Amino acid sequence: MNGIVRADAPGKIILFGEHAVVYGRPTLAVPVMQVAASVEITTQPPNRPTGKPKNRSTGKLNLWLDAPDIGLSAPVEALLQQATPPPLAIAIRSVCQALGVEQPPRLRIRVTSSIPLASGLGSGAAVSVALIRALSAALGQPLPDEQVNALAYEIEKLYHGTPSGIDNTVITYARPVYFVRGQILQTFRVVRPFTLVIGDSGIAAPTRESVGAVRQLWQADPARWEKVFDQVAEIVEAAKNAIESGEVSRLGALMDENQALLQQMTVSSAELDRLVAAAKTAGAQGAKLSGGGRGGNMLALATPETAAAVAAALRQAGARNTIITTIDGGAAR
Ligand code: PMV
Image: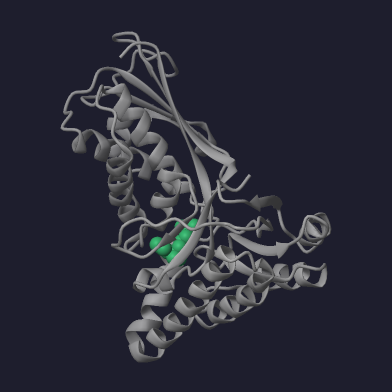
């Protein structure tokens, strides 16, 4: 390749059904275009990586990784030799292996992202999707969405253990998704737009841990948790019907019901509960955590009139950041 190859991928937010989706129940999620991961790939001059430290070998893989957000600038080969290699280096190796490329040309891979890490907005999957698109194009084998999605899912498994696949799916296709693990992608119609306020608790909470905690509960008493997951599934179906029939005001109560079940699963937290309560006091019709939980983001159903007050209340209650977004059938903007 010559010059620069670049790929971007949006964030995502789960509206209803997180965690239960791991156990085969449906979930609704939408892309969030206000945040994105970007991967830029440039050729490096032979025998001389363009950045610091100069003249150091990039190893057999010939790849140099810059990820300034997490303080990485090193040959991928060297990163892979670390006791615990950074997930990004593993992801790069996975893409090369999947494409059957053993000795790539000298490339410099720069990864940046405005999606907060471990916060329920799909940062890991977005980086994977952008990386797969950019690297496969740079290696002369650009992949169709279906393969991008499949490979991103394989990489998600390295991070999460038992991911449902919702993140990579919504982010690859960048549209609203009704998702059931292992089933063909379905989208849903948004008849009447609705307004959400997303609040970031500022607490990084790895999804792997909360998914593991729910698994422990389920293993100890599968019958009880299967019932809870069935209740979540009913909420998801009711929410899909409400969105598809334009009765979006019904979503508030459904969010509250879903949040109560997530609390039972022990994946809420004092901070998330405080944000949920603050949003409702400021006029939100309902609110819940979103994603893995125990930190990360929550979302609240508002109206164009109440959204600013809800966002202000969330910041006052400790949210590090808020996003007001309209779900209108395309991506959340
Ligand atoms: O925290 P996030 O955005 O990665 O979402 C995780 C969603 C879960 O349902 C908790 C896990 C999964 O793999 O679907």
